[in-house]
Amino acid sequence: MNRLIERFLILKNNYRNYDTKHALKRMQAFRQAVRELCNKGYPVAIELLGSISFGIAEPCSDADCVLLHYCDLHQEDGECPVHCPNLIFEQEEIVKTLKKKLPGEMFHIEFLDWVNLKYIENLVKRGQTRDNEIVYRLLYYRTMGRPVNRPLVVKYCEILEQDQELMRGFSEWSSAALAAYLETPTHRYSFNKYNERIINLGVSLPPELKEELIKYIEDIQL
Ligand SMILES: [Zn+2]
Image (cartoon, rainbow, N blue to C red):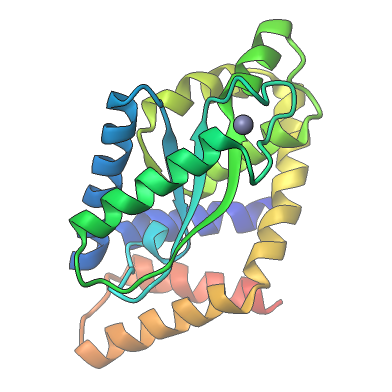
């Protein structure tokens, strides 16, 4: 299963070199949204998942994101409840900026998950980071996603990654999580759509990417 993660990452990195114009524009809009929130005193980062993490976003593709933020109200919980005022404010601000920067684009912005970095910071301070699902989720999103404001998160990930026992636990956990994700029909659908489009446009993929794509498709069909 770990081979699957490696393949997924190679593929993701390769696809990124083929960013669609919309993927680039959307990335810029996300960066702007995060910058504006940071300027208002709400330091946040986002991991983008789904089509944009492969650079294949179209104007109608949904934006799947994970919000990484600081919340003092729920610092013992790891994740804020949906009605958390900080969470609601941050999500609304992000959506507002995106709509402003991408007028006329009809896409849905979905916050799939969120992680409270204040909680992570506390765990790191206390040395209690092992065997913790919130820690695993943070590492997973950092591995699989496309970051907006990476520096905010990477300082924690670097500390966590030094703990070999923690990383062994994470490796098992993340393999299972990835397998579950690859099983989702929308993931397969967006891939098929993209590959069809490439073929229709007559764009020739470099041989290594083609090879990776074939291996990946074989793997997910197992
Ligand atoms: Zn909260």
